[in-house]
Image 1 (cartoon, rainbow, N blue to C red):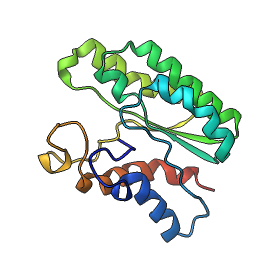
Image 2: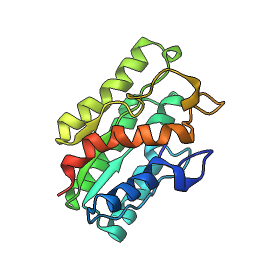
Image 3: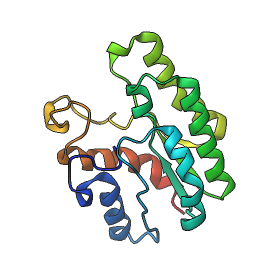
Image 4: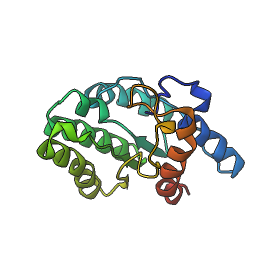
Length: 172
């Protein structure tokens, strides 16, 4: 969702965040290390070099959706996300964890376990949490591409506002 799949990257919520930080004169730069289709295992493998290179003050972790869509075990996803949170915090970064939900056709047990994982991780590590990236979407197809999964350009400012509400308190 952060890699701006199917739209110009300059119109994605991460690029819009960079514009907002400049507009509000907050002295932060944005590095989008997202890879479209990434799982938490891939993100965990790529994180340390990115942390070493950029030395971020804040890390937004928005991963897990692809793990869920592939039906991967939730404990493995949690382990990867936990390692990413710990690495980020060890490097001195404040962390914002962004949750996702699975469609109901994955069954109540899996969807419940998946959704709870983000809340449990945020509590365990004392991180800020966006429980669900799409929480402020109104019902309607205008916010999703034809695949029914990836947000449209119209959805990007809404996603930014969802992130911003939980991110702003982390900015010092």
